[in-house]
Every structure is written in structure tokens, then in C-alpha cells.
Amino acid sequence: MQVNRIGRLSLAAVAVGAVVALAGCGTSDSVDGGSDAGEASGPLVVGSQDYYSNEIIAEIYAQALEANGFEVEREFRIGQREVYIPEIESGAIDVFPEYTGNLLQYYVPDTTATTSDDVYAELTGALPDGLSVLDQAPATDQDSYNVTQAFADEYGVTSLADLADVPEELTLGGNSELETRPYGPEGLAAVYGVEVGFTAIEDSGGPLTIKALQDDAVQLVNIFSANPAIATSELVTLEDPEGLFLASNVVPVVSERVDAEVAEVINAVSAALTAEDLVALNSESVDEQRSASDIAADWLTEQGLA
Image (cartoon, rainbow, N blue to C red; front, side, top):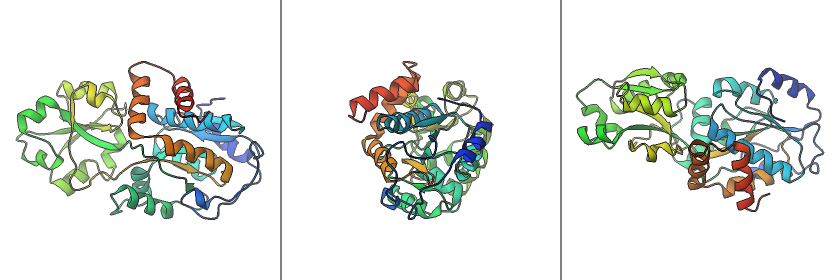
């Protein structure tokens, strides 16, 4: 069952009975063995961001769990981090696909970790009590700043550092929360000496964002790196030599109800999910207009996981 109303989540938290304690936080090795499939008190609640790619990953988790005998309830398209993190922390959601770098910056804004391994290692110790992360996937989907090919050619821009030499005012476009993120306008100024204006475009780097860029309403946009439109729209992703953006691998955040058997199922998904896979899955959604359910089912079958 899929429920999109966030008020429903608090009821799910109340319904949770006995929990299976985690030995610590970090990888699947920290999850105790426990109940047989389906023996948890009530269904496992799988959540997702209000972002189509995140919903696909959440649906993959959900279907993989169902294929292994677990009862699942879906709470998809909840919103962005400021909305859903409190619900995860409250125990209302048991499994949620996240991204290592962005999640680490949420809890540790001044982190100096930048590489995939360092970010993951710090993240395992940064989560509040009751939450843990399982294995991270090879797949990444991190913030990136993009310009049009024409802009890059005109000004010889290949990296964020080059923007400081562009002789025109620049406006950055992205979701409204980007304005206050560590890698938003303040981060660009602090790390690269690049001053930008900001325009909120609420479609997570989707067609509205790309149209604004192509129309020169903005000159720089934030698009997640697994978005197939970067290639199909002839955009140039600017290099980030100073590590403004942290590595962000796909990683499941889980509650104390997730035991070793549940973790094993989800870790198998993570091990199989590559960066190339994620771009292809996203393309099926964006270009072919396929549902998250159908995309997930086909991928799990191809991987031998369902």
C-alpha cells in the first residue's frame, strides 16, 4: 500500500511494538540477528523523498523485501530532508534511501570529509541513537553545478573555479533549500570566490530548471549527477577541484526494527546498484514515463533479486 500523507507517519510509529536493537551504527555488521521474515511487529515502513529517482530506489527496496517474505508499507514522496528526517528519527519510517554526503552535511555541516570512504566512515558515527546506515551502493547521485555548452564555450569554463573569471553577473538556480546549503551560494563564495544570485526553481533539477538555464534566466543550475538530462540537454557539469560537494553514494538509513535478515536483503540491492544503473533507471522514468513500480520490478528481475 502506498500512502503519501505525512500525517499518516506518526500513526505508523505508534503501531510499532517491540524493536530489535542494533549493536551499533554503521554497516550491516552492526545489525543483530533476529526474527524470521514477516515476524516484525507490523509492516516495515519504506519511505522516499519527493524526488522521482529516490522513489525508484525506495520501490526497489520495498519489492526486494516483499520478495523475501516481509510485509511492507510505502510512505513515498514525503518531501525533502527538513521534512522527512524528523519522521525517520521518530521511528515512523524503517528504511529510507539516502545519499551519504548530503546526509553527513545535514548532521555535520562543517565536516571536512570529501571522499566516498571518508564520508561513509564519518556518517556511521554521526547519526542519532536509533538510526543506522547499511552498506553504501556504488551508485552515486550527488549535487553538481551545470552550465550550457554554449556558456562553457564562450567563457572557457570547465570548473567551478573558472566562474570567478566570468565577466557577467551569475544567477544560480535550484530548489529553494539550496540557498542555505553549505554548497549553495555561500559555499561558492567561500570556496571559489564566486558571487552568485539565487533563483528558486522547485523541480529538483528537472525540466523547469533546464529551461531556465537554456533561456538564460539563470546561468548555473544544480542538477543531481544521475539525471540523464545532463547528457540529453547538452549540459556541462563543472569540475569541483576543491571538494565543495561531498561524495554522495546511495545508502539505506534504517531504524532499530531492521534486523540482520532485512539488512541482508537491502545490502544485496546496494551491492548490485551501480552509477550506470541509476542513470538508466532514471532515464526510464524521465524519458519513457515508466512507473517506479515497473522500473523496480524489471531491475530486480534482471539482477536475480526477485
